[in-house]
Length: 388
Image 1 (tube, rainbow, N blue to C red):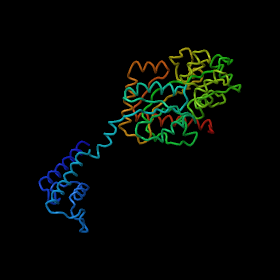
Image 2 (image 1 turned 45 degrees about the vertical axis):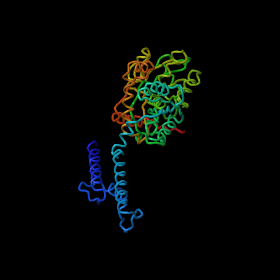
Image 3 (image 1 turned 135 degrees about the vertical axis):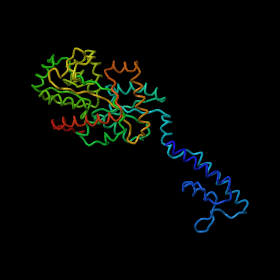
């Protein structure tokens, strides 16, 4: 790239030198300029066109000579002052960002996705030198918010949080208004288990008792929306434990948590936002879906202790519109890593139950493909359908 730019400058310097030496001469330059510059210089000198008609009114030879020389010199100087076309894209990426950045959270306030977005916005904005403004756009299990992202200009000024429901689960359940793997998927941000939380007055006190109660029927579990990873984790539990718990979708985590606390539903596969209810005595933690026990709930068993081999981890990622310049994606990725490398900010994520788990971009895309295959098998095995 540098060699091409240097060659460009050298060619144009030779054109300028020729004009200085032969202000009234022709354009038979020994070190030829590119054809597009030759045409512009010919126009600047008002040389006769192919049909014999001059491009300027006739003037005295001396004045014509001066005009030709001046116009040609000005033309070449303007060309030399402009950057070579090959460097335009790099310059744009280097100057980004010059204004605030919108971060879409595709769920209502109050859930784990919202918590992740708000924790990330401040330090990411500080690193980038521009504010990152969170915008909640919930609905359709997160699809509405990510669809809005997909229609935004690919200039780095609109980002969105994503998860399994919007990228790897959704395509198996509904026609998607965007190509999940065609977006500019930048990195995974955090991972965490789901918490199987139940209403405080549920008769079952242990996980085996909960499974036995579920086999009797009439239990209902909530999720943050049809097609979300919470929904599919509930279906995976049904398949693995041999039970049938009815799914009740909500428009986001906040409303689902409210109805769990009000004992409208029996259970909920929650993200770390559920800890607020558990710590406040408004819900009980029955199990976690990670392969092993979770440090934030050390006395709560993993589902795998009663259902061998069961595991389902939740995660959130960061995405930009398709076509966002590679240099801008690289910059965002680097600044996310800086956030998680800061011990103070990493501690805040850890305390919220959000384990930082960034990935290189290529590795993240491979992870998304594998996750898509896993959830596809769950959807087909359960013959799961949704109606938005």
